[in-house]
Length: 207
Image (cartoon, rainbow, N blue to C red; front, side):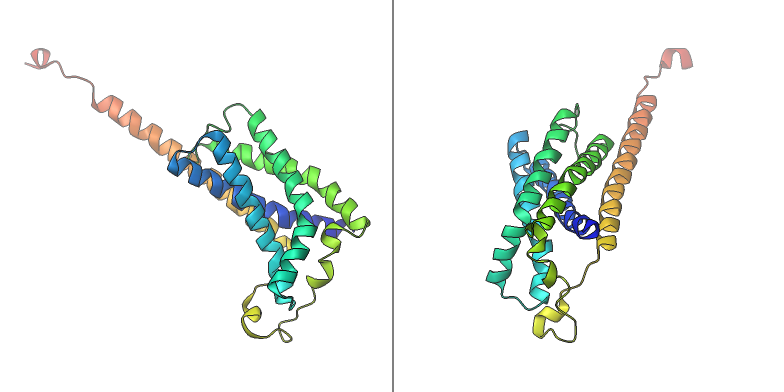
């Protein structure tokens, strides 16, 4: 039960992380307000969360319509819980929403917010599983499609373990944080160079 709840929560967390960051990237690129950026990030989080959950069902042989219906019933509450908590934490942390993707504060805040969201969503998923709801609806399909039994394009759908999802999230967030720190150090170094190079020369003293 605990392992199944952890796996279900990791699926939601991975989708939320991708959607949230991509939403902030698009929002910053097109100059959206904080409210519209959050709305876009939430929509993308649901999209990627559903996508990660529907892939194992398609590999198991379910039709697209049937798989989508099961995923909507299984993941909606979990993703909604995670998104509410995640965005509330981001709003509470001073400067987190205004920080750009090149600011380490954004990545540190996002990582912390997603961690809190995982802690809150885990018992929700466990309770749903215990009652035969949530990921319990789709759990049997996640291991139902062996590569030899799957035909056509479904064979190319990869099977992703919980450990791989956890590793991806850590690498994703750590990579963003490292790049932001590097960008900030480079900017500070550049500004320091301009400051020293722009100092006026008193030619009268030189002569």
